[in-house]
Image (cartoon, rainbow, N blue to C red; front, side, top):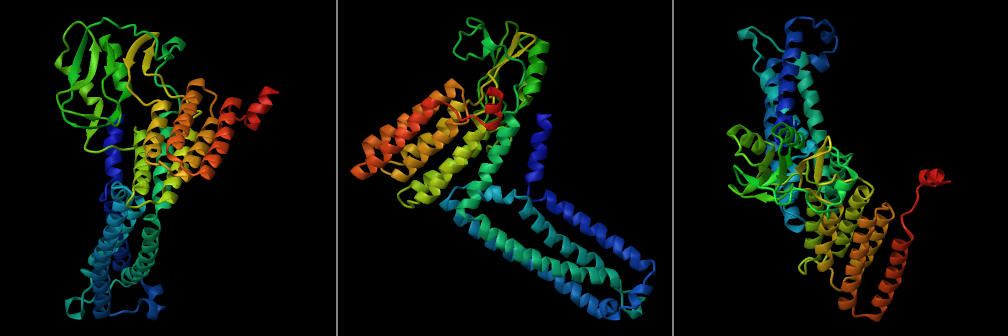
Length: 450
């Protein structure tokens, strides 16, 4: 299923798929309207000569003008858009351009303009003058006029959309909501069955001392996805334990270890190929199975905003707020153990993210770039307090407490103003007290407790 989903996701996010569907729909529409005109059922159109009464020369001129205008609009609009997005990507992050090109709205606008152009060409070729056997498809020509008016409206809306989408708030919010969708998709429940004792990642490995065989990567690239069901099935059928050597989002070099197998006998070619096929490698990371990539994008925007050349604290604060929103969504979720069991037997040792690793990805680099910036430090403390209010897991609360201590250490060595120190210490005391008191209970939890 994963092997099918990844290519389908690439096709759906490409710049040609949706426009191609719209162009095909415009061809079908043109042929349908021409068939109606050919059938001769145009008596009702004769009652509206000012709407449908047009000669062959006028119809040709109008459709030619519309078709030419649509191609000009496509070229000029998207050239201006790419220039604007290039400037935005240099200010925020280079991944903005790819996200915009995969936008359904962008694809739909391109498809509408190309569809109107195609529609006009098909109708135009059917118009004949009197010496050729006069035929003017009045209904199809009139509908071409309606499409042209609609295209003008789409153009105005698209310009407004571009002006809005290149703003920092829109870029960060878009990435954050995609990341939350990935979190909800990746961590709704456990994969496989893990006994309680197996969830202790620090417990001794029962496979210590076993002989491991490595399966090498066939190509280089970022690990985009793993077919977990296929790994479990292969491990069960071959009676082996599969240990992933690379996690989602990591870069894999060709002919280096992709997985290791606890197995004595050599692997056959078919099993090796099946194991390699369970991993999807590509030139870039995606959010399909990589929630850390969404966090990475927002962190990149924050780091660019905190750089000395830009020094945009407001944008960095906004990034911290959305990172807090993502981690707050993740805090109460059950992240599967790295050890995957079936029928009480260890089958797969996965290499995936943990709450602690995602928390570090979100705040470590921003914290190091926020030296002396009281606004960022205070907002990070508030974010950590918010996240802590949504989890009762001791390990996660300990990781949040460590982040608070890191921020306090940064403030101690970088804040020089006594006023700033006083403000920070007051807020630090409030957050520390909140971490000690435990998570907030929802109305549902309170009712259940009573």
